[in-house]
Image 1 (spheres, rainbow, N blue to C red):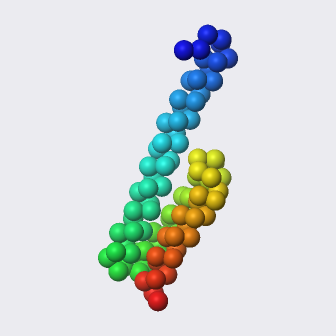
Image 2: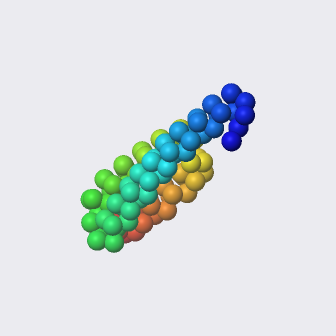
Image 3: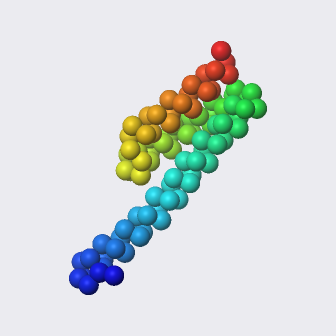
Length: 88
């Protein structure tokens, strides 16, 4: 454990951030799974609506620094490709 007051504070802050990031990442997995489920069930309208939610969540996570912006772009691209394959 850290000895300096500032190091102790930084450690506490890192634990708080870690928990917050864990919650956000879990939410991202949930919205992605929602899209995947709609796609596998051939529900085009539900998949489209779920995709919109997923895109917003991914962009927000990237903006907050929880995930890298290119990771968000890659995930959005893959989900969009699956949803578009339904209508094609």
